[in-house]
Image (cartoon, rainbow, N blue to C red; front, side, top):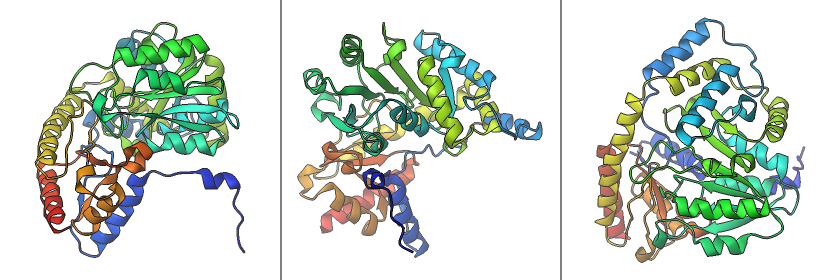
Length: 389
């Protein structure tokens, strides 16, 4: 039988990091040594007190269905976290907990975007933004992030992209894949447009705790923005909990109710014992998190210095997250070709900048969520291959 797929499947993109990982694992199975610098996942264990909270919850029988929007103790803990970090206190009924942060993006777009509606999103940016916009039938409008502005955007260009069809603006800071951070001035420009034209904003802040320079400014905290912002955050990056699948959103009540209904129709709920562990993540000590961020800072400095010593590569210093996004245009090969050569010839898994949108052409993304020793080995292998090409 030949299965006929719905046309919408042709509009669905992917996250290339997982595809490259699959190729790398296949090479590894053939005996090739691989250095993994492509995946956006902390290489640290989940802090012990969080694991213990999850184990305790399992032993206490927290293995059954939970409310679709999340258990109330976790939603309350999120309320307190938002108030502490952003100075605005939402209501618990404005909080929705999901299995990972991606569902918030998907449910939001499903709930508010109709065919032909325009969504402005950062490019290069997290690939699921563009994928999901296209999937639900919206028009993805790319906002270029510019290296000469530390991978921030030009405010005049942003304003020129806004039309009467713009229904949603997506912002991400600190950013994947560039490690850039938006300033208060940048976010004020977005807020001015959102307030003036009454446009909803998705503020993706999952890397907010991984900052090396400057401060985190939240769109949600700006005047007049809580009522027109969906605040997206999660536990994967800050607490090294990628496999726990825990994310959350804060949004106006009427939207939260629709997102909750989408949860009921798709996932039913987020794992109950994971939610109890998440409470401990928010309320427990941050010593291990602080140590992790400091280690990332050391690795950042090491990889940026190493990349800048390779002929044909230049790399500005990222201010947040755990990614370096070097310019490789002088090498004279496309980003995709370099991704291929580095994996198959050097045994180093990295990502082409085009995996994050058309404005990523001429760049590569390196994740420094790996040891300094492995980063050094990877850079050495890359340098050797480039001399042969």
